[in-house]
Image 1 (tube, rainbow, N blue to C red):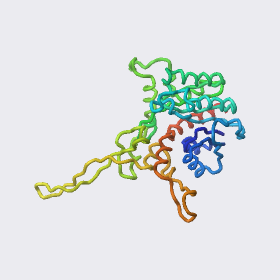
Image 2: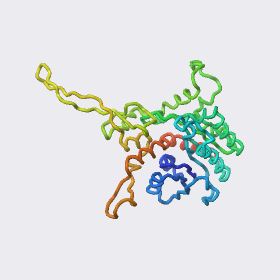
Image 3: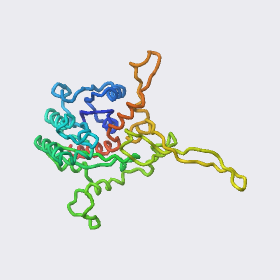
Image 4: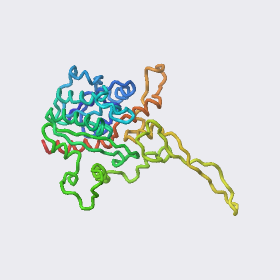
Length: 324
C-alpha cells in the first residue's frame, strides 16, 4: 500500500502502519519542528511542503491519502470560523488532492467540533465534495482511551473508498454496529456515537496507567488538553511521624506535577524519545543538542493517537486482502 500523508505533523500514521509494510511516498508538513522530526526518522521520504502545491508533486500513483487538516477552525479555541477560515478551507484542499491522485482509500481526521461547525454545514460541504468525487465514505467518533492509552481524546475519523461506501463503513464499524435493529436494552435518548465508542472497549488494555510507569507518576485523569497544561499526580514523601508504640510511619501526600515529554509520547502511543531528536544546526559539531520540551509538547498535542490509526490501518488492510 503506497500512501501520501498531508498535514503530517510527526507522522502518527507511519508509526502505526510501518509494521504492515505500507510505504509512505511523501509527507506534507510546513511547521519547523515536526519537519525536523520527519527528517530525522524518515530521511528517505520527501517532505513535499505546502499541501496547496500538490499539482507540482511528482510521486506517482498512490493507494491511500491520509491527513488531519488543521482543526483550529472547527474547535471552540478557533472561534468556530469553519470554512470561512483559510485553515478550514484546507479540508476542501484535501478533496483537491483526492481528485488529483484518485487513491482507492482515504483517511481524514478532525476534532468533534467539525460536526456542528456552522450548524453542520461545513462538514456537510466536505462530505458533499467527497461524494461528488465518487467516494463512498463513513465517519465515526473514536476515543483514544479505548485503544490502550491513558487519555480521553475523541476525534472524528472519515474513511472513504472510491465508489463503495460499504467497504468504508466496514472499516469503521463492527458488524453489530451496522445492524439496523436496535438492541432492546439501548435507551432511545442515548447518543448514537456513545454506543459506537463503547463497542470498542474490547481494545482497551487492562492497565493504561503503565503509561506513567517509568517516571513513577500516576495520570490524574485522562485529558485531551495535555498540550496546554500537561499534569499528573505524584506521591511526595513529607516525613515520618512516630506512633504511640514508637514505630515511625511514612507520611505521603499527592502533588501535581507536569507531565514529561516521554509521558506525552506514551499518551499518544509513540515510542519513548520519538520527539527527542538531535538539533544539529544549533550546536558545535562535537556537541549533541536535543530538542527543547516546548516544541515536543506542541507536536505531540497536535498529533493523532497512534493506536487508533493502527486499528484503522489493520481494518483497511484486511478489506484490501478481501478485494484482491
